Length: 238
Image (cartoon, rainbow, N blue to C red; front, side, top):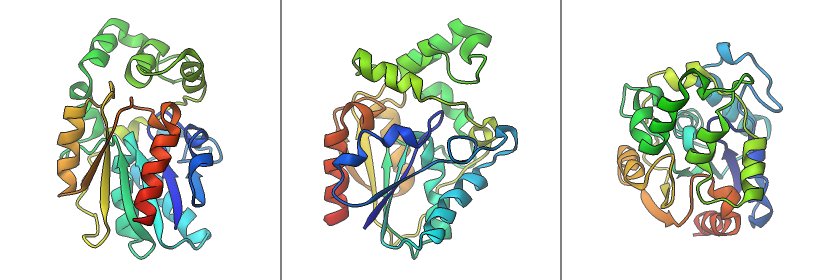
């Protein structure tokens, strides 16, 4: 099996770089449109473009028996990929993923994800985004980095990129999941971005997925790369 890794919001494929060396099987970390190897005008990027980018990678490389892994915002991309290419996806893995109730958007639910982050957003006001379009470091640190040491924090802040407002504001639905594809949700118990209670609510919209808990914050691929890789390896071989 090949792991295909889909990053979350405000990130690119570099977020997986500390975990992939620990995976037993081959891995492909994808850049979604508007960053890294896929430059695009974020004002023109839609969720369908995210889905098409991942499906395009599967088709171009003729990948089958894929373990499709998504983190955070990728929760709204994975269902579309699985629906478009069910013959190529052997398993879906959602890592602390946002899965809004249809037909709402991620933006509609943002205030309920993290009370601590909401307080910082209120304090920062219009400065919640930097001039580069990335999250203010105070907000990013509170949401994503609560379990990090200084080196991990600097790495995470250094790889953050702007996100598409269109994607986070589009209505979404997880109803496209093929019933025959096994589904796992990895719940991160120290997550300050999507709290464990919020993750439990999110995963309920996937039907009855397998749930695996990991004692880590939101960016587990950076803070607990070996532990997260071990879980993924187990899912691929189990």
